[in-house]
Image (cartoon, rainbow, N blue to C red; front, side):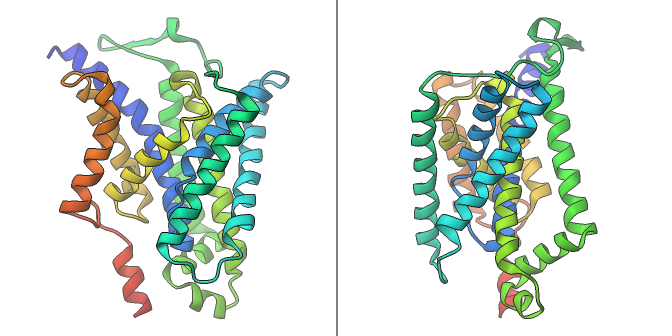
Length: 297
C-alpha cells in the first residue's frame, strides 16, 4: 500500500474515531455516576446534529450549535426524570431494556419531526475544496475541528472531575452512592447532571462531525453500538482510555475498507466488541468496575 493512501486511511480513521470516542465518553459519564449503560447515547449525537441544522435556518452557526447543545441537554434531563429517577434498585437487564426503548422512542420522534432526509451543517471554516495538504494527504479543515473538539472535551472533563467540588461529588457517587448520600451529597441531582452532561457532549460531537459524516434520524443506533464498543475497549469508567479506544476502532474500520467490501465496515466494531468480551471483558486498559465492587464489599 502506498504511503499516501496509508496516511489517507489513517486520517479517515481518526475522523471517525473522534465521534466514537466522544460517544464512549458519554457512556462513561453516566456509568460512573449511576452504574447505568445508556444505550440512548447515540441518539443524543443525532439530536444535536439535527437540531443544529434546524436552528441554523434562522440563527448564525455558533448560536445554532449552542442552542442545539442546550436543547439536547434538556432532552437528557427529561430522559432521566421520566424514565430513570422513579426506578428503585433496577436490575442491569431492566436498565438496558429501558434505555434501548428510550432510544427507539427518540428515533421515531425524530423521524416524525425531521423525516428521512439526510442533513448536514456547513463547514465551520473553508470547505472540502480548500482541504489542507499535509505530506500529500488531503485533510479537511473540519477534521481538525473534530479532533480539537474531542481533545477539548477530554481536557474540560478532567478539570471538572479533578478540580471542582461538583466533579468530586460525582466521583464520590461513582465510588459509593450510598456513602455519598449519607455525607450529604445530592445523589439524585448529580445523576440528572450526568445525563445532561452526557447529552450535551454527544450533541456537540454531532454538530462538529455533521459537515463530514452528515446526520439523519437513524444514525444513533449505530453510534451507540460503536460507542459501547469503545467504552468496553477502554474499560468502563475510563474516559481517557475511551478516546484512545475510539481512535483504534476508527482506524480499524478505515483500513478494513481496503481489505473488505465497504458494506462490512460496520461489522468491524461488532467483531471487536465480541473479541473483547471473550478475551478481556475488563477492556484493554482495565476498568473501574473492580474498584467499584471492592469499595462496596
